[in-house]
Length: 269
Ligand SMILES: [Zn+2]
Image (cartoon, rainbow, N blue to C red; front, side, top):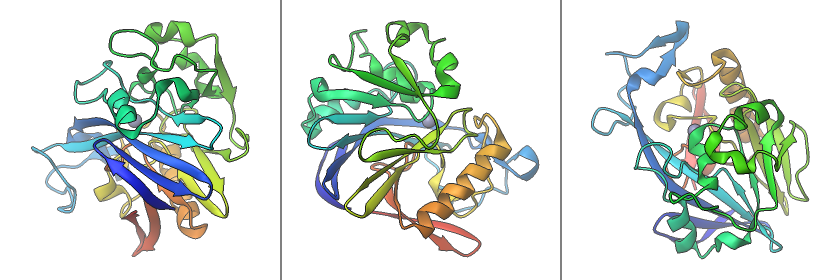
C-alpha cells in the first residue's frame, strides 16, 4: 500500500488493484474523562504524559474511507454532517477535493451507527449526499438503532443487514469487532496480496490505546467486549501484516501496527 495523491482533506493510496481514499470529515474534542482505566476509573493526574491534548482536551479526527475497485466506489462511514459539532461535516468538500463525484458512490457500509458515522448520508441542507446510492449496509445488530434516526427515515427501508464473516463483494469481508457498539464491525479490504482493515472505532485515542489497549472509552457500549475486540484486532493487524484505517486515528488514519513492549505501536503510512 502506498500513497499516490493527497491534498486538503484527502489522501489516496493504491492497495493492489484498488484505490483507497481517506477523507477527513473534521474532528471532535472530548474531555479526558472519556478514557477509562482498570476498574472503569477515569484518569486524573495519572494521565500518561504522552497523551496528546489540544487545549486540555482529546482531539479525535473523524475520517471516512472510499474504496474504488474501478467499477464503482464504496464508502465506509459518512461522517457527522451537521448532526453534531460544527467541527465536522466536511466530507462533501473532502470528496470534491479528491475528485470523487458523489454520484459515483453506489454503496455505503457502516462500521456502526453512531451519529459521527451515519449522518453524512444527508447534506446539511437536507438533500441526499449520494443521489445514486443503491446499497446501504448496516450491522445486523444495529438495524433497530439505525431505524430510530428520524432524520434518516428515508433510508430505513433500504438498509441491508450484514454479519461478521460475510463477504461484501470481491474484495471486502466483514470482521466482527463488537463492543464499542453492539454490532461494531471492521471491513477487511484485500487485493493482490495486500490487506487493509478499516476498523471503525477500535481506537479512539491513538497516543494512548496502542500502548495501553486495555484502556477503554466511556462511549464503549460494552467495555469488556470492546477491550477484547481491540486486543484481538491489534494482534490480527500486527501478525497478519494488515494495514489499518481508523475512523478516529489522526487523519489520514492509515498505517501499520507493530508489537512494542507489552502493547503495540502505530506506524502511520
Ligand atoms: Zn466514532
